[in-house]
Length: 329
Image 1 (cartoon, rainbow, N blue to C red):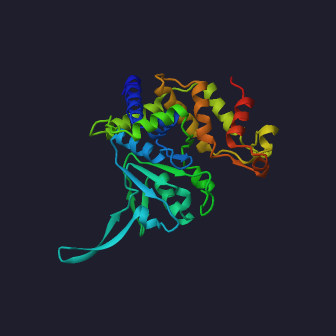
Image 2 (cartoon, one colour):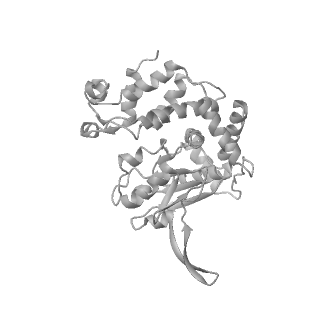
Image 3 (cartoon, rainbow, N blue to C red):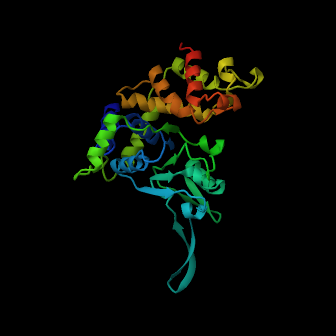
């Protein structure tokens, strides 16, 4: 596959999704970058902003299977991954594995922070290992495989915040903003009239090879050593520990941090920047590509302390300070 083909398919996917989804252009692009980067996405936004419709529409444009799991406090791991059931075949009774909804190409984990930690952890192996284990037997998941989880930032009662280890598995954390007045007007026009927009698949029926080629091409995008060093310094600048532990955060950043980003954060920045470069029709990564993906790649990986909470300082504000402090070379 050539970069021009990648860019053509990528733009066709964006255009097809926009037939149904109003606004959220940056969110759509970042989800597609994460998909071709082989990662998972956490969407955060208040109810009613079209997060579920967005994920379903993207799946339709990609031509991949889609399953939605509504997470609730009584949801069990077996409801997600599947279980062994007793079935009769050829006059004999034997246990057969019945697959759960996790066996789809794109899985929407709706309101993931409403499920118990035990249930949340059942998604963890699937996200990291691309397989699930039931009664000691491993079952491979579909390929490609992507989890898109949603959580509501304003309802805290009856929720179980995702632990740091699970947050770290998400390639990007994207913030879904309310529509502007113009966007809301267009939403009303599309949803209260006689005609409803429908998404058409962009990728061919046999899309597995094409998706794999696009994933491979993304990883082949060139990144100059100075830009790679810039990413390393930026991620390292989120480490609040003493110098003996490698902490390099400036005092203005360090005062708000408990923990900095893991190496997965740097990996997500690099792969995200490569995907953004291809989406814009380039075969090399620029500093601007890095800064466009730095926030979604790191905002959920840096853990703020009590002082940040008391002063109402957000992770994005800390990352803005990181960008100011880390010089380009």
